[in-house]
Length: 408
Image (cartoon, rainbow, N blue to C red):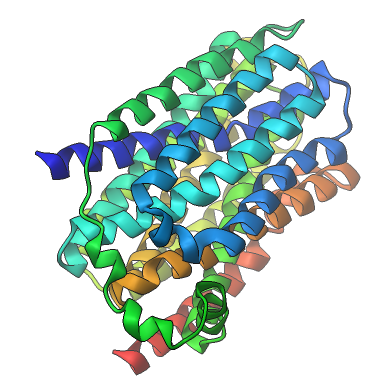
């Protein structure tokens, strides 16, 4: 019963942070219209979120077991609730930057804790992969829900959309309440600390871990994946609005299809990975991703502004392009599960700290590059160029498989 309650708390925590973090695409779209900022200025929201995540993860991840994983997560959820209150009370672009910085700090702690706790409540690589896929799948359910929560509050004029943050704050508070009733045995997170003490302070040990060739290849793969995912996800509402010419509310709702496809892909990944080797499955996924980019984006050519008033008028690209989410979905949770299963529990927090750092940097890089190309060229070109990091990621997975084979 205690284990089930803890797992439920971890899942709801991830859903809450999914809704908070991935509201950035909607906030970019609304900030351009509500606060009069430019696209490059709006793209800085990703940086306030991701650079904060990177810095905090890098500085604190190795120390979280000493603080207590549960205590650290409680603090993160409290900060996230405060971040939700800031948005509707202040209602400005500066408030949005502050909000994403606060959420970034909270998520930097929460992600390390959640993934470290997966190793504490599972006892085999297969169960680890299954729970990881479930939690990542629920993360995408949170992303999808976020789009629909915001679309319910979007008004052509005014700042009514900011009231969505009261809903997000309530969900985050519920996750906190559930965690407060849960208990966790954290002794496995401290196993091997005597040996680790000889490696120096936790921060130094994390730097040594980052220097390992296997870890370098792994974090490079995480960086490239998040660059692709966030580059598309953060700018998809704007793409729908300016390239496909959907109304603002429909643009946000259509972007939820991408999140829905990611959720489907991650829920399905658990069953697929239980039967097949991870490497060929992920290569098929990347090939499908490239094929969809090449085949679907040309369908956005020649669309007429103002011709779309309902879903029946929406172009086919609005429904087909989000399918790339199914192809992308299995990559991230699979490579993380493969790595964590190959490492001792005491190294999970610093390893996840590195993952969060490089994922955050990848998200910021993807959003800023996509935004710059979007502003100076067009949205189709910005999304088509995602073929470059896709090819690099395929090469990274090849190197990752070889390195894992060497240490097995």
